[in-house]
Length: 61
Image 1 (cartoon, rainbow, N blue to C red):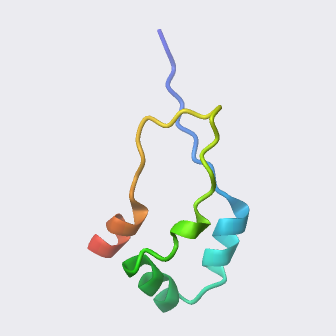
Image 2 (tube, one colour):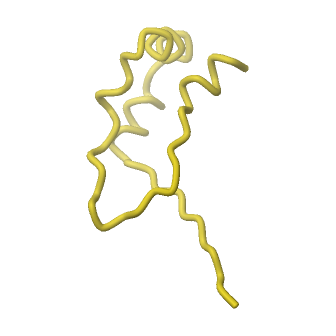
């Protein structure tokens, strides 16, 4: 029997920058793909089965 664990990691610097912005500014930056510079570098020791495009999810909503 195995246990599968899903862990959500948040980059504090990136989150702080987003949270300190006005919503309409964040939305406009998502539309123009201007938030991607905030994505942290992938850590080789962590394995991701899949990525979620949060920008697309929010913009589709």
